[in-house]
Length: 200
Image 1: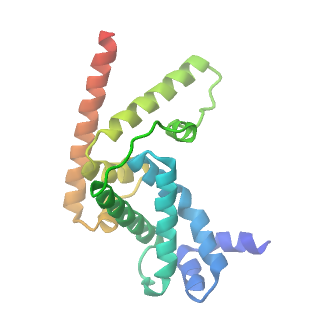
Image 2: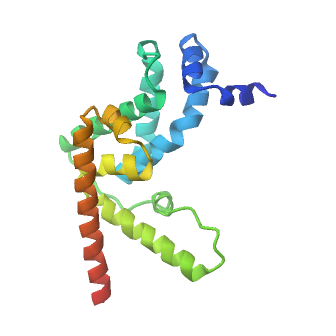
Image 3: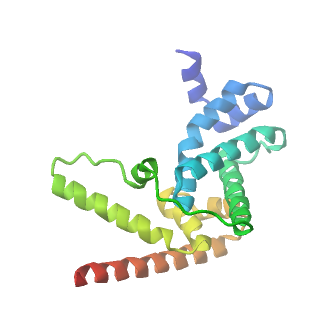
């Protein structure tokens, strides 16, 4: 068994412990384990490939720099998500203080908006699913950010309420309330889009 395979079999806690002792490869394994999930969440929040990549890299860099302060009893994936969310919040605050040019989405951004191709030989059904996914993604962009983030963490990433509470730093009751409001807003947006399409 290779060293890489052995590292991939270690728990987060074991990898963190090794990284805290100076093993950069152990931290690299944590990056491999969670970077895609963190990136996907950041992308769904900002819908910009470059920004999502920057936020993801910033989160892992800050985590690496703060490893000595990471408590062994904590969950690494909760911690890295919280760092990423804080980086996102900081970015949003910075954007509000300065004007930002709006540019057309790049081809790479457009590709990131599409779901992975389904294993379906029927191109009509596959196209319908792809269109539906874009429809939901567009509606999700219009949900207020306060409600969109917990909604993504719950319904897309599959985190439980307690973990989302830890990531966002708010009570579980607040998490549930925000998710409920986010789902309500998303449902209304989707219903409105459906009525519009039916009228065409």
